[in-house]
Image 1 (cartoon, rainbow, N blue to C red):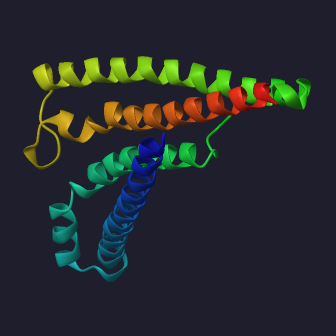
Image 2 (cartoon, rainbow, N blue to C red):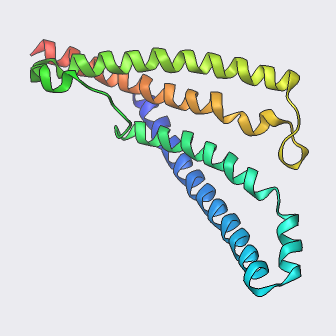
Image 3 (spheres, rainbow, N blue to C red):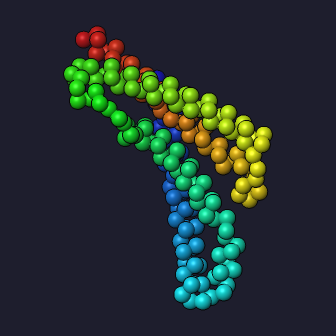
Length: 175
């Protein structure tokens, strides 16, 4: 269990730094686009329009970075327990049942995310076989590798949650 927690902490640091880098890249790319567009529109600088034309790849890249940012951010939020929860039973069940409820919710989430890992892996394999080119003439699957990878990160985070909640339930029953 301690090994999982250590991996989790290291992974969280790497994800955090990666998220910061992605955000900076997105902000800089969009700032340059807006600045060049404004220089051409309001300042009538032709060079700004030519430069903007050479940055036509930046829009699709920012869209791809948003996808990466979404998965990495959701993984970090899941680690911190701040992920989206739809919980009807939290107010209905007595407090002594909360560990069991948390365990069941984490287990169900783990199963669903496991299915999503499989689906996204199959999708990525199809993209590798039949997909075209995307940004910078790279195969389209290169940017989309975050789909199965992101769900693997979420799977890992929910696996840790299942283990923690299982220990919590066992400790609660021993008392």
